[in-house]
Image (cartoon, rainbow, N blue to C red; front, top):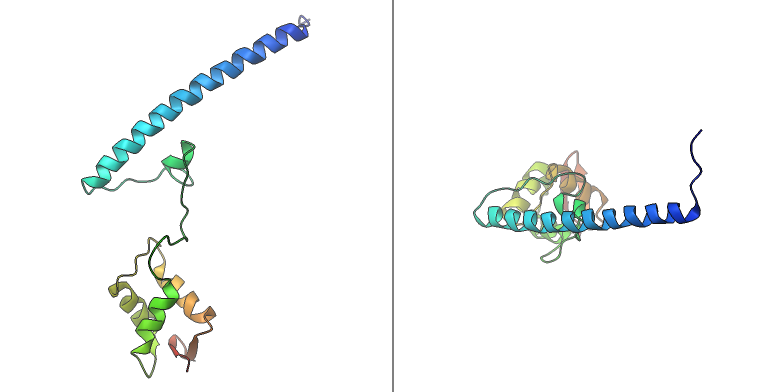
Length: 139
């Protein structure tokens, strides 16, 4: 039969485990900072850094992460779409719009940028569907 521990013993054990957790977290933070420095060096040299886990290494290390979908600067995709479609009186196919937007300098890290463009055209109030996969600017 197991020995019954007192509250004092349980509290002591809890404090020890909390101290161990704090030490391990501090060690992890140091390693994460070092890893972030190495990642920056790799990026400066033109290499690619593959993210690990759901939001990458930075999130795993407890650092702040800017998630995709938020554009900190520059114009929104809709503005680029308007600019491209303003030059096409008879409308354009989605694939042509997709290529023109990419050429104008819009940056996207999406693997399915074509799908994003198609969705923006389909749901945008400023765009008119002329036929299957063909859109023009309203007005």
